[in-house]
Every structure is written in structure tokens, then in C-alpha cells.
Length: 269
Image (tube, rainbow, N blue to C red; front, side, top):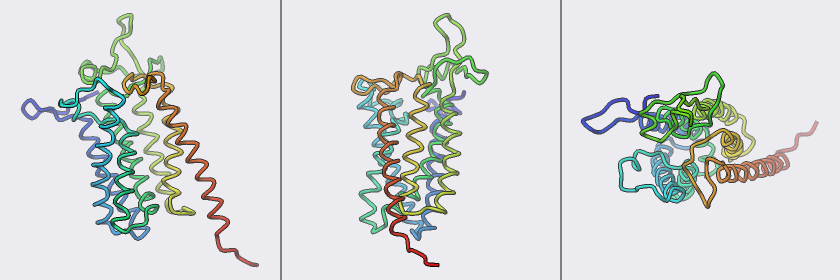
């Protein structure tokens, strides 16, 4: 793994940062294309995208401060960190919720345009996590277990040796999520063409991602992210949030599909 690509003087250009920037740009491009299908001006999507990214960054940092009380705020490491994803999701969602009425845009159409882009951004973001070594998995004997570098350990604390002093091979949970999110992106783009109601793509994204994250937490082992006494290592906090989001999304999806079916024009033979 290569946490750093190169340095400009003493300032490191990190692989994580490059992947995050690339993911954001591609996500915004995808959202503009999907929004255009629903008649949303592309320039408005780009404006919203910029503020959504800002809201997401602020939200991810704020939640990071909450779940990691010992984090040093006024440091370069804090600025380089991607923060906590659920905080970013909430921050980005709030930015959209506030600005959409001001722009006089249909909220659910905008949400459907952004949801696949978020999935695509996550796919690239997790590649960055893999390069940096953060969000690592539990030890495994499987042939695709990953041994991280010493530099990765210095950046994130990812284990590189076992208690017996042997090389530590870990589940590449970052790659699992990255590849699955890429597949989810493709699925959401397909469903966008065939959606039954506005908001359906966002709801499906919420359900699928939450189930995926709930499952991955069983083999994730990064201990950072303590929340109210529950740790990411045990997975209790993230699993709980993921389970609540998944159940809520599925119930809401069933209700909206039923409502869309009941209000659909009836055809007569």
C-alpha cells in the first residue's frame, strides 16, 4: 500500500486525498447526468454538489470529534483525515435539504440524482482508505489477506505484526466495500431509468448501503470511532445505526411503492 504518492517539499501528497478528490469529481459528474434526466439544470447540480461536499466535510469532521475525543483538531493529520462517513452523509444531506427549497428544485428528484454519485464516490474513497491503511479488517488466513506497510502503520496504526511477531494479514475490508459500492452504483443508475416514484433511488441506496455496512462491521477491526462507550472494533455503534437506517429505508420503500401502485392510472380492457 502507498499512503503517499510524492512530496512537495515537506508536504505529502497522499493517495487517500487523490482518490477522494477523484471520487468527488466523478460523483458530481454522475449526478449532473442523472439530474438532467429529470429536468434539473446541470449548473444547479454543480452548485448543489459544491455545497454538499462542504457540508459533508464539515459533518464528517464534527462527528469525528464526537466519536474520537482525543483527536487533535489543529493538526495536519486532522485536516488530511476523511472523518466519519455517517457524519459526512448527514452533513451533505442537510446541505441539500437547506438549499433545494432556495433553488426551487424538487427535493426527491435531486436526491435521486445524488444517491448513485455518493455510491461512486464511496467506491473511490475506500480505495483511498486501502492505500492509507485505515478502516482495516480483522486477521485472516484467507489467501487474499493483506499485509500493510510500515508507512501505513505510521499513518493510521494499522497492525503489521501479530502478538507473536509474525506478519499480520488482514481482511481487505476497504476493497470489499469499494468493489461492492461500484456494483451498487451500477444498480442505482439502472434503477434510475425505471423508478416508480421520486425518492426511490435514495431510499434503495440507504437500505443497501446500511445492510452492506452492517455486514462489513463483523470483520472490520479499526478501533477508532468510539461512540457512547461502543467501539468500531465491536461494531455495536455502527451496526446499530446501520440496522436502524436499513429497517427504516425498507419500510419506507414498501410504503412508497404501495402508494405509487395505488395512485397509478388504472387501465381498462
